[in-house]
Amino acid sequence: MSSPVNTIAENLSSPLAVISLGSNLPLQRVSGLQESAAILRQALRDLQELSSEPLVSSSFYRTTPLDSPAAAPDFINAIALLRPFPNIAAFELLQCLHSIETKFGRARDLLANSPRSLDLDLISFGNMQCQEPGLILPHPRALLRRFVMTPLSEVAPALKLPGQDLTASEQAELLQTLQTSQQIQRL
Image (cartoon, rainbow, N blue to C red; front, side, top):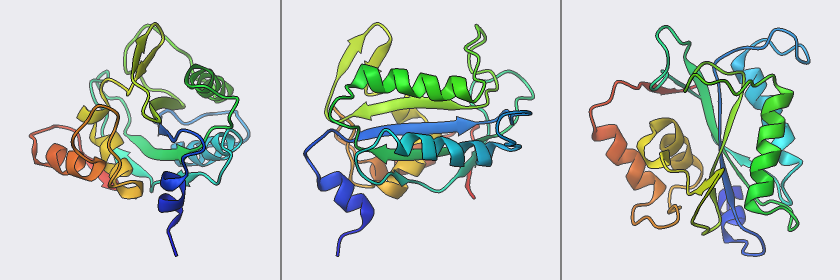
């Protein structure tokens, strides 16, 4: 019997989309959500609506902010794997992710890496590689981020992002050996 991860990874009928989720700014007044983990749980339900198969998600991880303003709160991060419906291309999926972020009060301000109620990044879309305005795939900084590679290695350890030689598990191990100020803890 194959695991849900194997099942979603083996299906070649539509591309596998890898989505990174993060939240470090709890909402005050959206559907009664009070904490970042609750925001991610609801965002996963919203992402399921975009998937033709059951969503696969990682555990939640508490991570210290990376390149964020001083005193920014810790993030809660996760990874989701989904199979978009056939009529959803990569750019449309990215637009859907932005709509979900907006639903949770995400304001795209000018301050890079500022605290946010919800951050959804499209890490990869099948084997697609592109550098178009508004869409770069695979995500250009995914391989440098423990908060992406650690949860990705949990749910799809053998997955290789397009154009890469290392698996998610190998990349996560490599990042763990590097000196980094970012701390990550599985919840």
